[in-house]
Image (cartoon, rainbow, N blue to C red):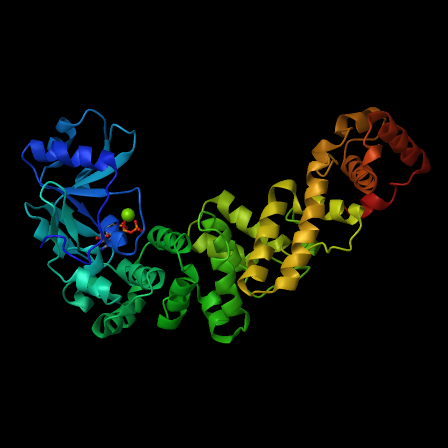
Length: 450
Ligand code: ATP
Ligand code: MG
């Protein structure tokens, strides 16, 4: 098939053409495949144009000066184009064995075989720049025109080969507003329990891809509707079933820019039920707020890194309380010092998203007003963090206070004073204050509870 009327024009990046031309000149076929061709129909311009080729990985490596072995055993070589961009060049493949989690592949000589192992018809399109030919053996173009998601071949078999396709299907359906072909939908629902068998890493990566996509809220709604959510995120599945906040959570997720996928994840987790104040009594350094144990459990289950888990827990725990527009400057500084400089902006982003997502103009306006005041304090140079105090632990020890918890208490007391009045953040003033507190014995008795 040639690209005819009604088909979009394909505008691959120059670097892609350069890679394809060189392969073709050496006698190999070079096709653009996958997302780049699919997205041309939805008008999305994209940077990552993947190449499928008849050349074997060693041949690809010998043709180009700058290559990166991305996954030689799967046939993928990264080729760095003249523009410095890396293109993924993958040898045609066919599956020889699948088990629902991974596939054993073999190299193949035809684009047809390569397209036959792809998951959905809209992903099984290939275009050869050398001839202008479009290969569409499974009716992907028709499905794109009809806004329909259909598996390549027998849907039940395709999901059983790799259960990740269940989640991929939900992502494509959500992102492009596709209707499921009925037999694909039925097979997908049947395959949902197979999600249990996937590795946490693949599920996590797929979830993050969905969160980074357009209409992520729609994809998550499909996760809930098909029962996919029950397998990896049952806590959120329960919210989807019973909680009136579910819809506003989905719109709030879409109200966060796509490149902040991690913040979208946190926004999603904020739908979990909270037990306010529990964290404080445990003396955790997450500060006051809700007990973030439910978040920790999910982050661990999906094998997020320790630092990612930490960031999610902190934002979740500190989401509430938020300062209000009528709070004093001192109260705002106190909130900022609790929230932490790094997280304050993200916390506001999370609140903004909820207001914007639900069209709550009044609360959005109040948030803008509050944020302006918070921002003034953020850049105003007040010592929000203990480390920004004009004196440190050594200074206190030199005043004769013994090593131990009293030193920390003293610093906290001084910090509270400068949060109240930042002009007091001066070495002499604070040392004088500390001497006076020691003389008064003001800290005595306080340490018994520490
Ligand atoms: P995007 O990059 O926009 O998320 P994509 O379609 O490029 O979407 P990738 O995960 O990058 O998705 O995969 C590239 C192509 O490889 C897909 O279009 C599809 O043809 C094929 N593919 C990827 N994963 C699978 C899978 N699990 N089963 C079958 N085919 C797959
Ligand atoms: Mg891709």
